[in-house]
Length: 94
Image (cartoon, rainbow, N blue to C red):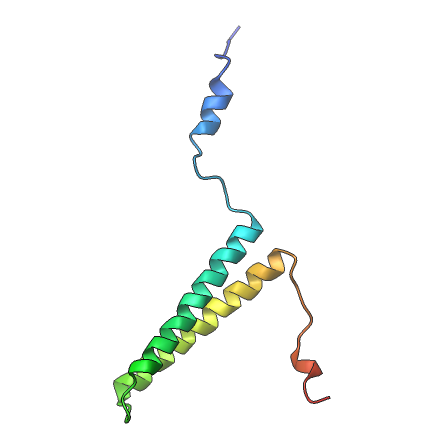
């Protein structure tokens, strides 16, 4: 009759040691990535020479791109976690 051992389902679930992250955890991870990207920009600016050379400009552009991408990821994760807010830009200048 095809009897399964009583713990078969339980043991199958035990193989998934890392359950999928919920939206809040994904948001925390995205926020941490954005914070790290922002800190990288700050670290670059602290060591920036008085007269930047083309390599400095390229590195700065790459750092800003990464910071912008991680901010977008953080904002998308916030939306997924239910933290959608209206744009603050429309309120400026009033």
